[in-house]
Length: 227
Image 1 (tube, rainbow, N blue to C red):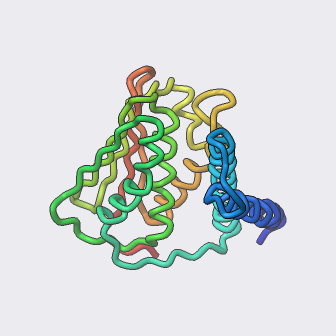
Image 2 (image 1 turned 135 degrees about the vertical axis):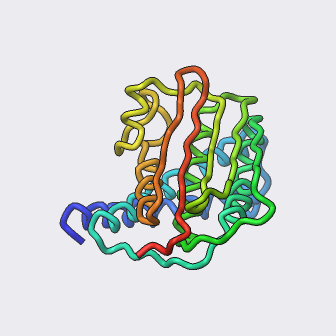
Image 3 (image 1 turned 90 degrees about the vertical axis):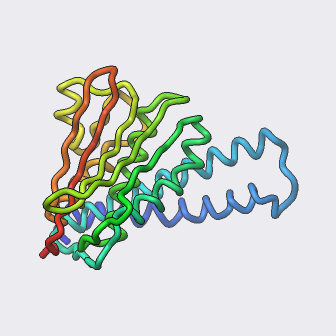
């Protein structure tokens, strides 16, 4: 690791370890292991658990990005059904969307040819996009995920009906620690990592957005195996 990447990796580890212990203790409290909780206590502890998970995931993202920037991250490609990955990610996101009263839909081909990809990284990229879409979609809004087969590979569309972005916000959305609104949830790191993951696979990522009319993020993955 170069010096900066090494510092980020060390900080990520130092933050992740105590947070994982805190979350473990909170989960035990929520499960009622030490004794029953009042409704308010359960509600507050659930918030603590959710925020711990958010920061732990941020630490994981920082670690991945540091390794990529230091040139020591290695893809582990294998034949991957992108539709199957999308189904798993959407299923994992449904409880969070339900809590926000957001609907999430998935449209996939009947048969999806496999691409050569790192399944863990692909899952992380799609999770990042859906999490971002969820933050910018209003309560009661919708998120649509579509997987299609194109001439050169597979294309994945994530569309939200949120506020959309201005031209300047769109220009900055893949810059680290930039978000679409001041003091918004998240740091924008997830989108930076998603772009890096897609490009590591030889794909590309595009954004189609209009202020007040929602956003579609499209990424492609080629059939050819990444080097």
